Image 1 (cartoon, rainbow over the protein chains, first blue to last red):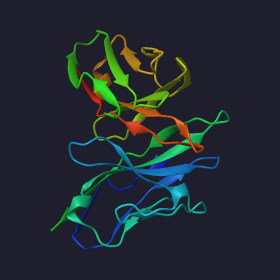
Image 2: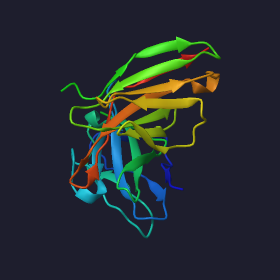
Image 3: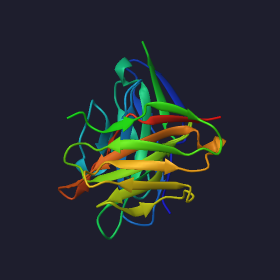
Image 4: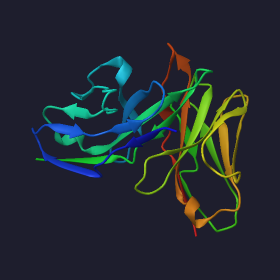
Length: 112
Length: 114
């Protein structure tokens, strides 16, 4: 069975400070990892996926299979980054389809 | 494209009653997944529908059932409601593109059981 752990419920930083949201996973196969974000009064939306190796809104995340981690990082936080962040793991089955297992989420608050 | 839509936005039911929630997927998507998000928790997978059949199910009792229609829209039914069923119910739609399923979420239906 797969599991996603986000150890911090709340992360509070000042504008311009570096941010790291932690995510650890447990999965016996080859995982696909995602970060989803939910801004206030908005729906859950995909922020980035590990296979794309892209930077979105200044955020990056590297999959570390040795440490089974997929931490989300941003060098300089902005107030508009304040939101709920969820790490999610996709278990790809033989037929090709997948479902998502989510962590409990970390609330990021960026103060001016 | 309005994206994934869900109805109703919120509703209140009494213990023991039955409820039906509805979801219309994003245009071009053929797969619908349902998630339950309790307060302070991440979304938890209930089941997934494709070609009008349930093809994957999470750890939820049989009181939770669903249906997918030929137009890919879907319903989630919950029988014999319990207080613990109070949660935000999310629908997500997806399709296989480039070997990747990206799930798009609806705004959710807030269910309160009293």
